[in-house]
Amino acid sequence: MDDDVEHVRVAVIGSGFGGLGAAVRLRREGITDFVVLERAEAVGGTWRDNSYPGCACDVPSHLYSFSFAPNPDWPRAFSGQEHIRAYLERVTDTFGLRPHLRFGAEVQQARWDTEARHWHLTTAAGEFTADVVVSATGPLSDPKIPEVPGIEDFPGAVFHSSRWDHDLDLKGKRVAMVGTGASAIQIVPSIQPEVGKLTVIQRTPPWVMPRVDRPIGAAERWLHGAVPGTAKMRRGVLWLIREFQVGAFVKRPKLMKAAERVARAHLRRSVKDPGLRARLTPDYTIGCKRILLSNTYYPALSQPNTEVVTSALKEVRGSSVVTADGTEREVDAIIFGTGFRVTDMPIGDRVIGSDGRTLSEHWKDGMAALRGCTVDGFPNLLFIIGPNTGLGNSSMILMIESSLNYVADYLRALERSGAAALDAKPAAVTAWNQEMQRRASRTVWNTGGCKSWYLDANGRNTTAWPGTTAEFRRATRQLKLSEYNLLAPAGDKPVTAAVTGRSAEVAS
Image 1 (cartoon, rainbow, N blue to C red):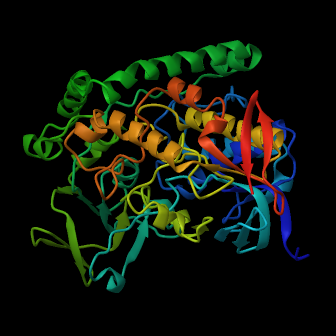
Image 2: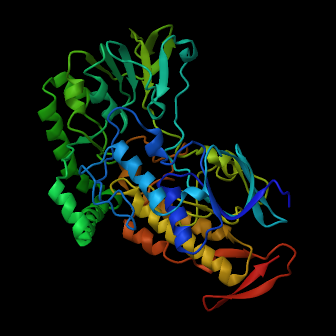
Image 3: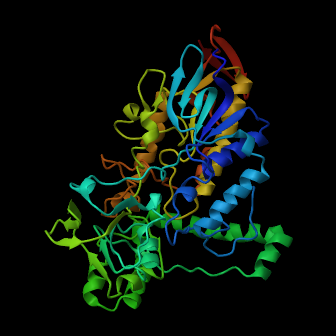
């Protein structure tokens, strides 16, 4: 082996919640021979990248944190970006993860070496080989900016919400906000008071619910620190409330009518102009797109310096944005709040499996992974927040921790079997994906009458989990060896390994 190539037992890609969670779990499993490859110069993932004005979480703080790293000092019921990022920095220090971090190490290619039975990773910081790769790049990491004719000639500032230009002074400027998703509804009320003119280009109005946020007082924080069980109980109650909501999302979308009535009342209270209110009223079932939380978005849209345009951005002509209705508006800056590459994650172009195809090529008909974690033809590659593990109403940290359970049992299975690698059986992946699509077909994301990032270009739901978080935890609690082909170490003959009381053939 090349002396310049560092070999590790496990290489983790990304240092957001998923990557740091994987690192903690590895250490808890007694595995210290691992690296965390991070393209940036700090941990935090999406909570490092998204630093736009007003950035905050729409999941309650005590549920949006690791169960193994409770934080009694959350300052608000819903935390801001700066507090979540600080939490992740504390987790990094508390669990001794810094020696494992490799910053500036963007993965340019990861190729499975069939003969050596390991992964070869080419990064911006050098070469690595790894027995196992855990991809925790996350679906909200690479911004999606639509191709707009003329945008390259625009003389003003142009950027995506997740790449905020903090050197730009927006005071008095004419700003176009393209998109009305989760980021936009936080940005709009944050910048509206200071800009000269704000043009919000809305293709589809979102359903917006009241945000029941409040400061968490010193006495409350003291209680959670002094009596940890109270914080655990609070987390449990928050979890249960959201588990009870799942049925309306995944089985009986008609039950969403109750939430729709709350959202309509919120809109009526906040927007007095009937014309504007009509433009802000969705025509699809609530929950089909992500439900947004804000008490300030609607009031900001009602201000004299704000205009809501319901025609899509068609082109940029000089210093003007031109919408599909032919209207032209002069602007000084264009901000895209147009989401991320969720169903076509860029990491797919960089990962090459045992048959020489990239993951993107393998997924040309849509993403699919066994239990959201493994893909046939890509041995010893595991995903955190893989296909069909996203949520529409609860905390992704719950799904991350369940996937970490699966990663841990996967590594144990390798040790017990003596195999060099496990490769998901195509039939197992297909069966799992067919069940996901069957269950997804009745969910509000599929039947609600909207286009959203939950669906891929083929109209298939490859992102959302069609069940409760408890169901996913049960599904990922233990690896089923019958769903895998076992690959023997390089040069070994086929052997039979006894694993969890069952024999399994190990292929050469």
